[in-house]
Length: 109
Image 1: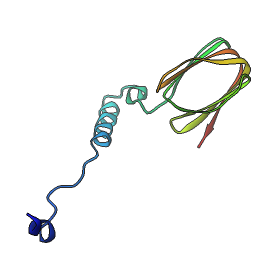
Image 2 (image 1 turned 90 degrees about the vertical axis):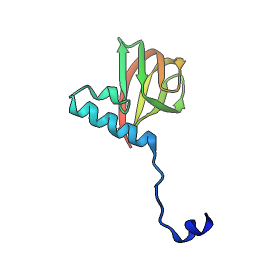
Image 3 (image 1 turned 135 degrees about the vertical axis):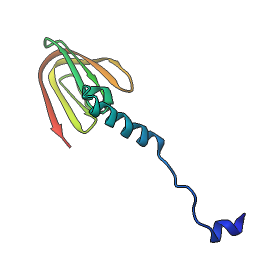
Image 4 (image 1 turned 180 degrees about the vertical axis):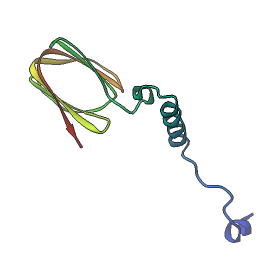
């Protein structure tokens, strides 16, 4: 067996299955002309007046103050300004922010 490793050809290459599944899913979504949010690679923001904002697809919290919150969401930063801002709920992919929201801004990386 060791002789085959040294002298033989490599019969397989390492496959990144997560990447392949993601590529197939994206081609499927594109072919059927489905909404891009189904791919899971976009950020979805739902805002209720200026009191609540739900961010789906967030990655990390960069800064968190009572008047300023900055999140990393996929390929951009999301900046939320206001007063009495609180992160009411948070999971791996979502964040619910409450308070008096005065401004929401996007910064591309």
